Amino acid sequence: MNAEFGYSANGYIEVDGYTYNKNDVLEELELPNFYTRLHYHKKIWANKNILVVLEDNVVNLQDVKDAFDEFQHDVAFDEFFSPYFAAPFNHICRSYINERDLYDVGKWLRFEGLLLGKEREEGFKAIRIFLEETLRLFRNINSDNYKSFRPKIMPWITPGWENFLNNLPDECYSLKDKVVIDLINLTVAIQKTDTNDARNISSGLMIVSGLPENLRNTIYGNDAAYNKNAKPSNYGWVVGVGVVVLKLLVFSGSCR
Image (tube, rainbow, N blue to C red; front, side):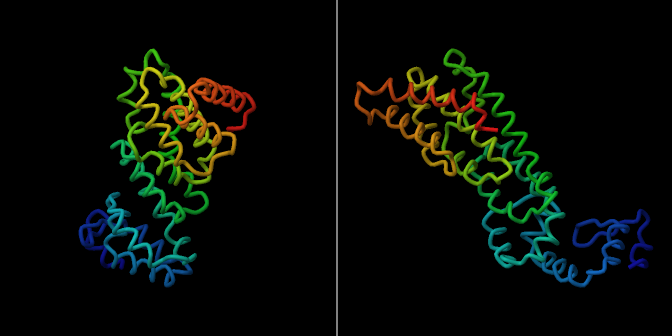
C-alpha cells in the first residue's frame, strides 16, 4: 500500500474515478477490526448505488432502497456505515430542500435509522435549520400579507410535505409539532381570503401522524369547517375553538 502511494506525487491515489488520502487508508488498515470492516468496504465498493451516495452525494431513491435491503437488521453494518453516511445524508437532505421537494426529503428520511449516536446530529443539521427557518417564516405571515409570502410557502400548499413531517426523526418531533401549530394558525388566518389554500393545507394536516390528541382534534374540527361538512351554524365555532386550543398549547409550553 505504501508503494502505491509512493507513486503519487501528492499522497493521493485514484481508484475508478474516486480519490483517497494516504493517511485515511493507512489508519483504516491499522484498526483491530480491519478485516470485519474490509468485508463491508468490499460490499459497498461492489454496490455502486451506495457508493455514489457516499462519494458524490447523489441518490436514486428506489435503487438505494434496494441496495440497503441487503443490510437490514445488520447492526455491525450500521455501526460501520454511520460515520461515513452522516455528511452525505445531510447534503442530500439540503439538496432536496433547496429544490423545494419535501416529498423526496420524506422518502430519503426513511434511511435515517442508519445514522447512530453523534452522527445523527450531523445528519439532521439541514432538516433542523429548515424547520427553524420555516417557523420564522410562518410567524411573519398574516391574512394581510399572505399573497406576497405565498410563493415562499408553496411547498406547504402543494401535496408532499405531509410525507416529510411523517418521516421526521424523533429528534425533530418538538419542531414538527410547532410547524403543525403554525400551519393550523395559517389556515385559520386565510380561511376566508384564500379558501382553497386553507383547504389544501388542512388536507395535508389530516394525513400527518404522531400528533398529540388535542392537535389532532383541532385539525379534524377545522377541516370539517373548511370543507363545509359541519353545520353552517357551527362553522365559526369550530374554527374558533381551534384558535383557543392553539393559544393554550403555545402558552402551556407543550410544544417544547
